[in-house]
Amino acid sequence: MSQPTYDVVAIGNAIVDILSQADDAFIVAEGMTKGSMQLVFSPADADALYAKMGPGREVSGGSAANTVAGIAAMGGRTGFIGQVADDQLGQVFAHDIRAAGVEFGTAVRAGEPTTARCLIFVTPDGQRTMNTFLGASQFLPASALDLDLIRSGAILYLEGYLWDPEEPRAAMRKAIDVAREAGRKVAFTLSDVFCISRHGDDFRQLIADGLIDILFANESELLALCDCGDFEDAIAHIAGKVPLLVVTRSEQGAMALAGGERFAVPAEPIEKVVDTTGAGDLFAAGFLHGQARGLDVQASLRLGAVCAAEIIQHYGARPEADLKALAERTLG
Image (cartoon, rainbow, N blue to C red; front, side, top):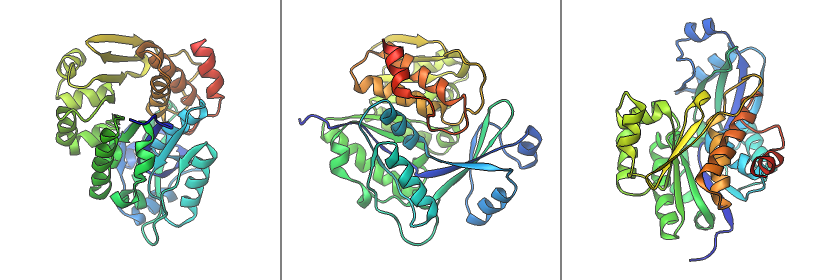
């Protein structure tokens, strides 16, 4: 087996986030579920909601893309596979992810629909409510996969958000096969309870088939996956089914289960939560960077917590502080 040349190669939605502040009354009036993600199925509906937004800012996003951008910021070598359209937002996404130091070479898709966008409303308590128009990202075909890039990554990282459309779902299944044939690890994030409600059986089958080496979830997602109402019951249910389970628990920190041993870290102290967009993505960045560097689970959890703390203290899901310096200070 050849040595990997990349730490993490990710496949996910290629999205440009548009963030704006909103109050709780607006969230209720628009029929949104605060703190969650919902899909917007037509460009017209996305345009109508965009028209109701206050002053906003555009920041390239996408869950897995945020994660590999965070790893690159710490000095890791990463690649990303995702579909954009031949339009202005597609150019913005491609420029931003390459500028972050991530290898990105997926060919653009001509014609409609447009590049994906996520309209994010941030309430005064820092909670983000996301409305995602998947656009071109949901048409990532298996033929667009860079198989050599997948084989060259120590870890293949997949996001549950992209499991919804049929075409990229087939592409990710192929990518899993390619990675495993090359002797690489496969990491998967459940992304959202919404994804589990639609594709929980698929996710549980991936786990049962032994195709997932590292599973990321937050507490709500873990409960939904295991159909449990109690956190400890859910942990007991999943124990032994994946080699490494990582669960984020907001202000309660994070925990991991590996080889029957349990690890935990507290949340990092911060001055103020500004925007929770990307908290899970950057936690995964810190954890995966630690794993790719050969750190133990405890140190990887701590690095994940540090990265998550950085991202929730400003708007947007791409780091603003020097993550590499933060990581070096964290790990001594």
